[in-house]
Image (tube, rainbow, N blue to C red):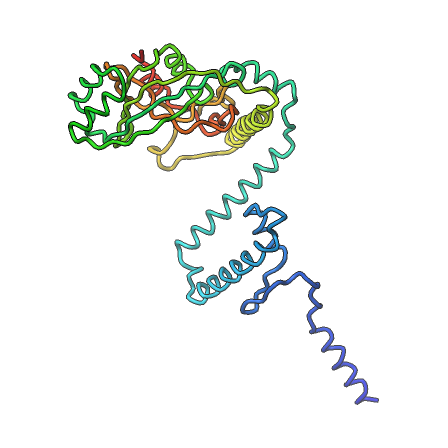
Length: 335
């Protein structure tokens, strides 16, 4: 009887030490004793934005990437790199950002989408972006900023077309690139767009931008209206982004008001905070004009980017307000 009880206790003890069986299909690989699970793979595919049709193929590649990452992490821990002060600081910063972002996402999760009436009101309030949208087609010669000499400006002043300027550059051995660019009233600052609308076709002007300069000629101004049905998704997204930014700024201000903040280094203390919720009523320009001199000393906008696919708000308000001084410099004196 004693031997039987001893054997029974040994069996029961062994059952208690046995790990519970893994759920089928949860672990996809085991790397040095660390499991890589379906949950991890699904999160990687979600972050990569893999469409459903490509999940089978992408899943294999992402699983290999997870295995490689686990191998590298295991090797790094073996060399105690996870205890390196710089690595520990980076990990703490990432943790802080993730937690702060999660808090803000929770606060913004219940914001209702804009109503059809709000979207239509924005559409009607900004005809230059949509119903009355204009498009500017321009030709440009791109040169090094150092080549924009007084002699070149004088040649441009006397030229009747950009082609004549190109001939002058060829004669002087100045290297340049040539292309056509398009901008619209939905891309530009309202004051700058107004100046371009008043500019005669063929008007030459020049712009400095960093280490290069552009000589531009206005070729065509044409109507490019965008119907409400096309603009709705972009307007809705813009309004959501603007509302999120306003509420996020208000939440941070609320937390600041309720916190005790003491600057131990007074030289790093900021002045009075800007008012919350002062986002502009319209998307800002795609790029603030830089200071540049026109062919006759007029200042002009920088080289326009490629045309937008639609007249949707660029969403610049959500990214930041353009430098008003730069805009004024870009508009002042433009013919």
